[in-house]
Amino acid sequence: MEQRHLGRTGLRVSRLGLGTMTWSRDTDEHEAAEQLRDFVDAGGTLLDTSASYADGGAEELIGNLLGEVVARDEVVLCTKAGARRTGSGAFVDGSRGALLTSLDASLTRLGTDHVDLFLVQSPDPRTPLDETVSALRLAVSSGRARYVGLANHAGWQVARAATLLEGDTGLAAVEAEYSLLQRGIEREVLPAAATLGVGTLAWSPLGRGVLTGKYRRTIPADSRAASPHLAGFVEPYLGRDSAAVVEAVATAADGLERTPLEVALAWLRGRPGVSSAVVGARTAAQLRGSLSSEDLELPVELRRALDEVSAPEVGYPERF
Image (cartoon, rainbow, N blue to C red; front, top):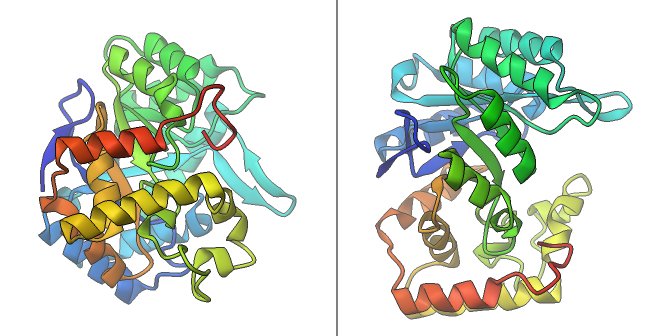
């Protein structure tokens, strides 16, 4: 698998990353171990997790697998902090104390003394960005993290953080949702990242599963869209506008004798500035479907057609 530099840093990551949001919740230890083994065997290195995934359960599972299934130094370990769930719902806290406390707890669960990449998971309107950035600087200077970045932040926040971290620390990455169904980061985040030498990690490159084509005719009973807890996550991409993009991807896949999943991933891998596309899989079989896309390079004409059919409309409707 191709290894790409994360922005202008010396850190290299696989162009396909392994997300772990379902681990210890929908993905048990056996399936997680098989996924991790298959991913590393295929040349994958970027392992993406968060303190918020399964309330720390995903990190604990990773900690159990590292050293047993693969060696710690075989993966580029990325975790996130700043978003957690409480009894009253989701809570965002980008304060210096909360971020560093969360990072320390993550290191304990992961069974390591450092992560390769530490990200602030969500912007906190109640905490000055300068304070949030100071936690990233301390994470590096204390040796807890090798590189730092932001996730799900606006372009101006990326630019401000990069300016504040100029010098020894630097802003290495921004992680954001990006797919043929969600191209909103092309407005400000991608241009800011490219100008500042910040690498982009794309989460949900399959449009929350919709670009696989499994929702073209109906909603499968075992899918996220059928789950009362996750239906709201998928629903925004089940409308008419998305359907036109999905049909174009399916048509392209038929012509290439590949799957819609492979076409969607190949399109995203080729977008300027993208260092890695982070895929999440509930089972090892699903992950193998994503890994099979590695040899696919889209013809220029087909890429242009997908660019056109998925281009944000003038005025940028809500889905973009």
